[in-house]
Length: 362
Image 1 (cartoon, helix red, strand yellow):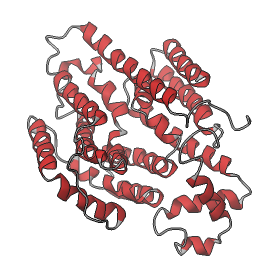
Image 2 (tube, helix red, strand yellow):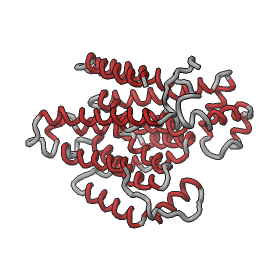
Image 3 (cartoon, helix red, strand yellow):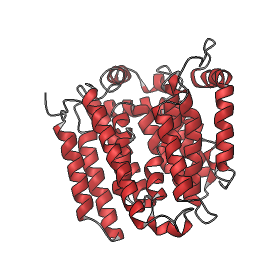
Image 4 (cartoon, one colour):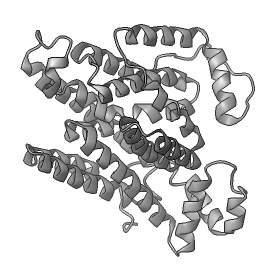
């Protein structure tokens, strides 16, 4: 656990030192991403991670023995072709699986840092949520999904800039790394609808209908996700698990502390994404595959939550005239503290991530 404690200590220390100007914010994001990359990209892949230890290592060795023609014909798999082509490129150039993981980590970390700098009003909070919502742990194992999530971070920028063609291209590229990331394709058109007072009503109705028709929806999603499966049921499965409740609390906090307005476009987009994530997350009690679908939208919570408590937007909040400045100071750090606690507890109870070793350690 020593490396993880050291990482969060350095992140908090540099945040305290680099406060103030936009230049310092940029410098902090760079330093923070370098620190994250050191732990994430230079880890010993035999000791750290779940998928990294087994399936991906085997796939890398198999792909190394295949020809480019076989891969292009889809012999390794009909979907996720770009993922295997990148593996082949690394092995063909003489690189190892360790190098492949390091390159993947570099890509995802750069995408994360770019998004935090552009959109987060408080990068240190965003990074705390990146840990607390367990995205950091997720990226240590789920490499295909991580690649896809990186491209979707870039695609979000195209939503903000209203560039539909670039958005579609980036989502299609993401789907070549993890096919289910196509679930993000409607996001561009969803954001054409501004969330107003009816947002909670629509979300509540959607959640109710999702519960009532959960078995039919489950089978519909299974047909799309896995290409057909035997009849499945959500009966007896917990509908709102811990992460679903966390998502609902985030949306409720957003409505209480900062109501979206017409000129608050990015905040409105992200609020809609949180609602969509809740609907997908309710199915993870059946299979955690559905959590992957939810996370394609929920990953943006790391920039959304700091926006909820952004005091520069206090004039746009619903209860700002009744809430003291101290609330906006304490609340986000209580969220962050809980997030860090949740991250460390998860690491301490999962042997796939401790003891941490770098690639040069046996």
